Image 1 (spheres, rainbow, N blue to C red):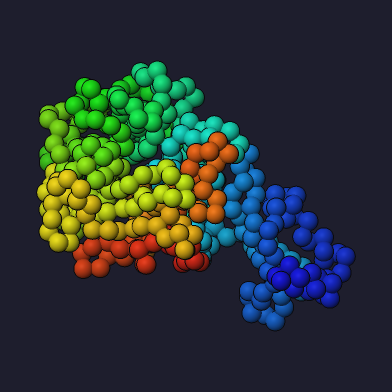
Image 2: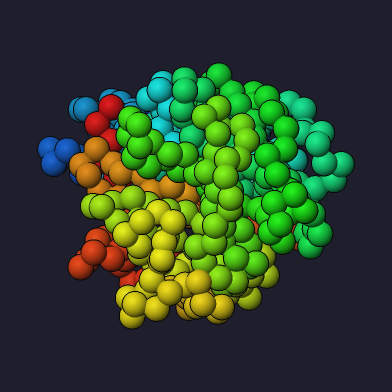
Length: 402
């Protein structure tokens, strides 16, 4: 219907010279448009044009929108660095187990699990954005695969800018691996390349089965500053302090959660520590029951408890439900969230992956997990997402003033 409207509009009001204004959709700006809408954006009585579709960047198709303002018959492109609205997913085809940071160059960068996309294989894909909702592929994190383990993929990277460099803790594992491990790689630039520093530990050396899904955090300041790594997948969530150079462990491991979780993340806020953990199977396509639970503690080492004051150290305890799928709404399997990102207006946002029930697998047969973004509301000291499900509606964009 929208296409018919714009065609009629073009026939009635555009002559041949004006039609030429739309050539840039497919040439200069590389737009392969899917939808064109005529609307009076600037309220001056004439019809402007909004084009929504995709553009090809680095051999990948990424979402893009263009606005053309009608100035007395001359249609001028308006570049929007900070679109007012967005809609999930914010990046496709796949971006599992994301971690998101703001780099010193002013861009936001996201890093995802190794996977084969429609354009080929990516060893930790890196994407970037100025506004948190429009992302473009940059590069792969590694030129050379880490060699301390002979087989496995690089999963669930966790990146932090510290000491003037970008530190990436990552999992190296096969599916059902009896001895997976966690390594460290460091880069001078957010887009890499990351240079491997070797193995931090594996399951055998640390004494924790399925040692994957690392998360790095520092708490305190000055003399009380401490660096921790948390990790684990359905065999308990553990933490351990790191040495001053962040390249080795220090002291004894400790346990903060039972066997219900993987992919730990901890948010320090208002003197408390909020634990987010993923529950269920990540990778069963449209049948995935993956979801997120949350618990809170007064100390980073716990005890973490749900709203009913029940410890998540107890086997099977999932914490308080935070985010789950809804096949009727079109998205299932939300989980493995990034660090929470706070926009320039103080709003908190959660990046995570989820599964589109209508397009749930990649060509390889692996589960397709696009990148999602939803706002967090803090109510009574607890985080929540409106509805408790991935939001597929048009939403207000994060505030980014740069």
